[in-house]
Length: 343
Image (cartoon, rainbow, N blue to C red; front, side, top):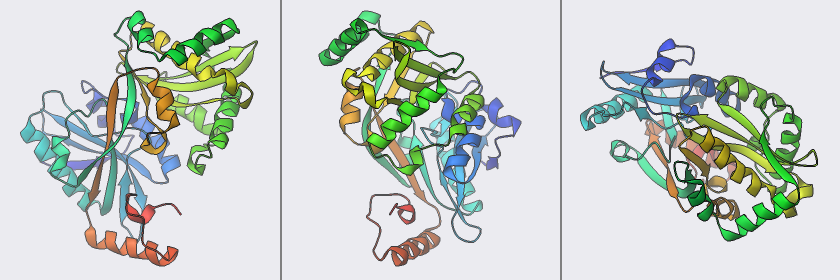
């Protein structure tokens, strides 16, 4: 069984997704955009034995010499495979994938597994390390409107009712006419929470994301008297809605308009026929105030896992030694790969 590396332009990537449950993170256009922020080269490893198929989108980043390492595109671009694939196929596909990493001189791979789609961890546990992260929050949009409201924390419900009385209105900005206001709300939020520089995307990232996702990305707003109070980007693919990015204007923090935004989002996407809304977890998969906020909308939980592989141990050790000499200490022990631990 052989695994091959293909570029986003290769027609078999999009064709391979037909009939396989997937999310926007698995689209070749999304990977191609992600390479801009990840600083590498986008592509995917595929296994196709004529019956079952296996796909892993990745960004290959330079390390030293002609060696590279691999990371999933931002989000949950986990390996996916054909429904009904046998355990024998999956075992062979994983082995072929790891062989292909070595063939492409990949030193290590950090792969984010999808909290919803990746329910079976067994194919990955025999190779590398599967690391359990924090819980994430999701809503089952096939539940009734009444059940979704009942599953909402009482203080969230009070805030939503209060915002409605105060004239806050949520809507989808189908023409993206208020993108500039979204950018202000998002950047004010990132500044307020002291987010890493990575999350301050350039202006053209957002229009490029919209173009890459071709009708799968939506800008939702909460307004009061024509002022944008909160805004968020949501993706939709194969019935799965993901909260991607969002923020609240500093002037509206006390009114908590993001609660109105999520309340509207679940209703709007439910009416469109989506089956699940994944809100995600806390910052860096932590059980923090952001997670607590999201948890107020649903009692349903999934868990994020990562799959961590070291495929060239000798080179990996040399890169860690280089990092230690540069920083005057050893890496902290939790960041992977260790030689990319931030200062």
